[in-house]
Amino acid sequence: MAIRIFVTGGTFDKSYNELTGELYFKDTHLLEMLKLGRCKADFQIRTLMMTDSISMTEEDRKIIPYNCQKAEEDRIVLTGAMVPYTFVQTFPHEVNIAKNGKYFEADRVQKDKKTGKFVDTS
Image (cartoon, rainbow, N blue to C red):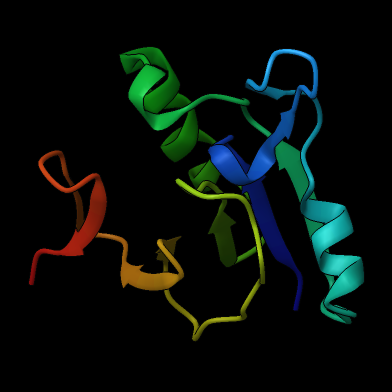
């Protein structure tokens, strides 16, 4: 059964500009990550946006559920992170969000703006 992966941006998809020291979006690193992890799963990748969560607009937020509802696959992964990527993991049949090297149930995660980390809200 195929997995649909929607790229939404986040720091793990940023590249480093050696001249300015800044991070910027170029292309997703996701295919490279999956190859390095020797992923054998049947997956389809679609880039919805390359945006920091801080910069997401209301229109950006509408794009994500719209595409999830239209996907033929019943396993959907959204990408994004506050730190550059280090690993990819497969999760049970449910919607999860991976942040800070942890995963959260989709309806039980929130960004704590005081600490800059994502936390479980259950």
